[in-house]
Amino acid sequence: MINDIQVVILCGGKGTRIKEMTDTIPKPMVEIGGRPILWHIMKWYSFYGYNKFIACLGYKGHKIKEYFFNYEIKHSDITIDLGRKNNVFLHNIHTEDNWQITLADTGEESMTGSRIKQIEKYINGSEIFMLTYGDGLSDVNINKLVEFHKSHGKIGTITGVHPPSRFGELLLKGNQVVKFNEKPQTSEGRINGGFFVFNKELFKYVSEDENCIFERTPLENLARDGQLMMYKHDDFWQPMDTLRDMEYLEKLWAETTCPWRKW
Image (tube, rainbow, N blue to C red; front, side, top):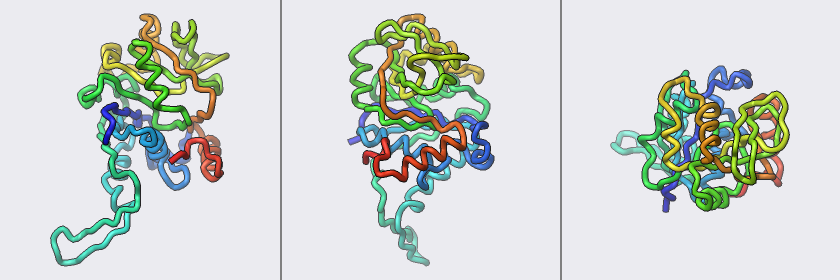
């Protein structure tokens, strides 16, 4: 059974810091272990039973559409009976048999807040939804993250992690985010690791204006209004910003103790 809670994945950026790979494909299609990093992210959510995805497409989004449109043929054995109608028979060898994926064009130049607002029309069923970036992997427990969000009654939950200072810093009072500071020059403590959970009220904080940057005014205003809480994650989290990051993730995937390969 498909869980009603949907997972929104931001897939529209140009990936300029990993240009060696993104001249011809969008960043979420950069492969780790022969599969796009986007697939790895989706497999992690699916491991916890969340199989309804909305991908916010932008730069070279057609590549992501083509990948999933041809997914069955690409990842199955097939028999072709020439000369007959309905002549392709799939012998499925993959386990993604209950994924539902909405691929939404949200504009090549749109910022993250604009992309989120544009997919509001696709959010249905549950009163909450999840959101993450299409270029980062983690072993965060998704079920515990959702339970934490439901427990506090605020609009948003952000996962706080402990990596490099070049990411947005979370200033806290207990577990409540009181200020969101995107990409400070120096940073201590926890920063924005993505893996968000939101109530639908989030859409009041974002706009379709292509210049709406989610990590700026929307998150800052949520924190100001006392509507943003943090889920602490102390274990694995790794973005793929550079070629070196990609090579590190490849190395981890090859190891038997790969932290996000639980399926």
